Length: 265
Image (cartoon, rainbow, N blue to C red; front, top):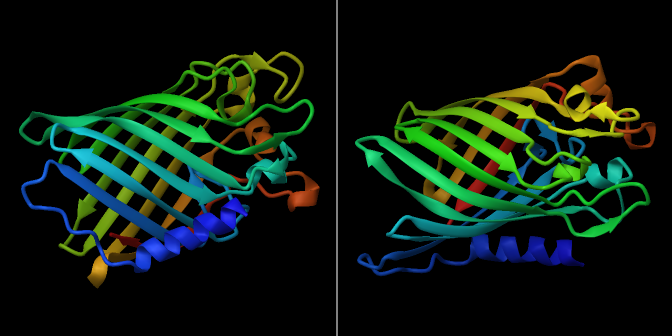
């Protein structure tokens, strides 16, 4: 029911006329909604290559403060049997500050909560994760570090201190066409039984990922685009990120292409 309500709300918001805000107001409220051929997060498909409807709302202040929320359907928690009920929705809540250091050099610092409502199977852990992040930006380049302060990062036990490092480029070829590239390093900390008795989480859960793509701006706030993604994993990591036979026995980090259409309002 909640998933249906989310879909209806996002579609209605996309079709509604934009809310006007006074030009001199320090407050800005924006929204976004998008339909993707699948949901890719840090190189991993979250929907088992099925379509994803995503969207959210953002508030920003002229001081540099911002806060927002974002949602998407997911399937990996049910595919792996981690959740027995629910587990089909990701809800993100975040807030932070961004601004200029000097010239084209900027910063962005904040906190992000990943929330996955549902009931967890016996022997599994909730995937809810809280990360602190900091980024430096220069024109169309950015470097971002995200640090988990959860003991069970994305459902992996004893993983506090897990981090993700992201290098990204979004180069505007024209005022409508943008080319993008990304390389990320996901590094898990701690020791658990995730892939064997008392085994380092780094052995089974860490990996690198990449993305290259392009997007094209259309009238009325619409954008279309696509991107290729993939991962660099060892045999142990591939086994860890492969769904059970009942869910298609699919490697979540397999090289793949994703297409999308989105709208900002």
